[in-house]
Structure formats: C-alpha cells, structure tokens
Picture 1: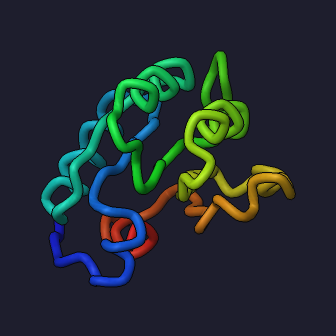
Picture 2: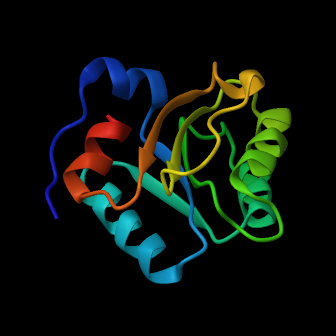
Length: 129
C-alpha cells in the first residue's frame, strides 16, 4: 500500500472523514487501511442501512463517501439518495464494475468520480484525492 499526503485544496474541501461503504468485508478492511495510511479517517459500513446509520451518528458529517454501486438490500444509488437526504453536500466516489448504467442526473453534482473494478491502490487514492 502506498501512502501520501493530501493536497491542500482537496483536504480543505472534503476534510479527512470518509465513509466507506463496501459489502465485502475483506475489501472494506483493505480499503480502510489504505485510506487511513494516506491520512484519512475512515468509517466503514457493509450496507446502505449501515451507511445511513453511520452518517446520522457522525457529528459534522463526512467529507466523502466511497461507495460500491452493487449491493444487496439498497444498491449504491438508493443508498446515495438516502445519504443525501441527511447531508446534501456529500461528495461521492462511486465504485462500479464497469457495466453500470451511469450516474443518474440528480446525483451528478455530488458524484466526483466513478472508479471501475478492478482498480489498484494508487488508482483508489488518486480518485479520492
């Protein structure tokens, strides 16, 4: 895993608090460690309902949500709609499998980037920064 420092402008825009929403426990932990090593503070959630609970519980909200598009119960888009009802200024990095239909028009202002799997640690960090 490679670390690095946050760019000043982006750090000011998102802070260092990231909500990571990934259903696969091993991937979730691996990405959390990578982001923590890069200077971010990460809260994780395995599902849309967990992500919603985490956002409600987080004083001051999150600067960025890194979220998997394909999840059971609530997919990434459904989860983003729920999260944006709580914190309308969330910025989003959407993780996809490359076949997703794209970002709905009502979410385009919040979705900073989409990152298709498979991706490297460096690609994830670059997308977050």
